[in-house]
Length: 172
Image (cartoon, rainbow, N blue to C red; front, side, top):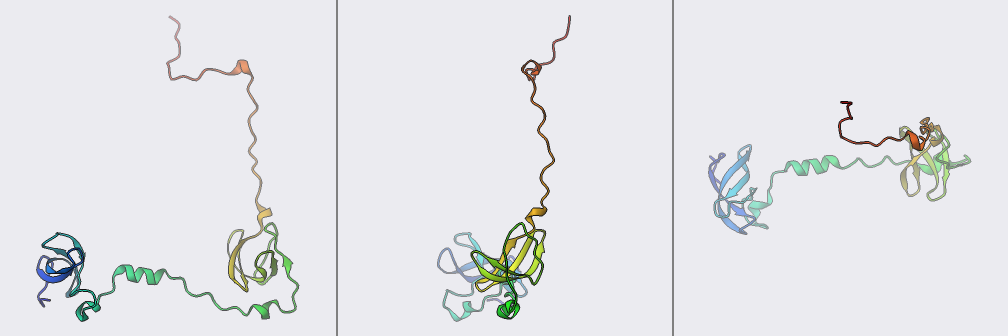
């Protein structure tokens, strides 16, 4: 690679389309290293590769923004909870989506077994820790207010009018 490399300049790189080392035009740079190149032969743009796959030169690749994004997108591991210590000596309450639960309540779920409410991330949501892991459950569903909308009364047959786009008739 040329130490004076710049955008618009030429460099030799491995073309991912041609599968061989070819001359490329530098399209983008990261610092002093080409980041994106265009093959002079096939005109495909791709990430700069100093050599073919498996070559010692091509092994050192700069981290791309996609690699940074995927690493940042990974959620942190859930905090370890001593489930047995929190449950010990407390009677679990049967889980009911209509009942309201608070952090620290011990519940018995029909599928997941006995667990502890860990957080309430939003309205009518709770996160409970079970032996199989943490689960997001709904609660306090009875607080939902039923709709107060009322259906309008049915019109009589003679009250119906034809709907049209035509202008209304005018007396002459």
